[in-house]
Image (tube, rainbow, N blue to C red; front, side, top):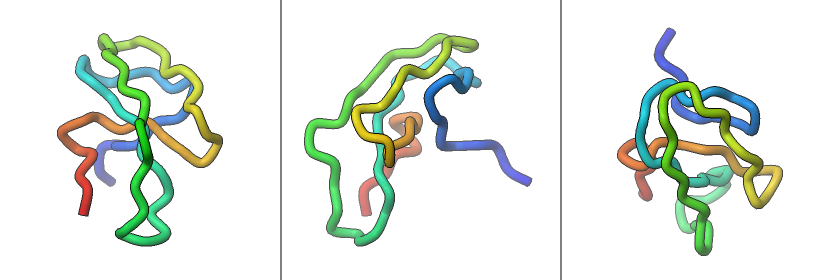
Length: 65
């Protein structure tokens, strides 16, 4: 089992870094317009996203296809 890469509101940040909102990948053409970006320290709690279908993902792991 691998390390968790997507986080929801209330989860704790496992590592410091910049996290961004990612959406459900229904199509590789789908992209989020103006996603929120936040800087987190280890142990900080993730805030609510701007849409219930979005999650937080660390920037270097949030690739666009």
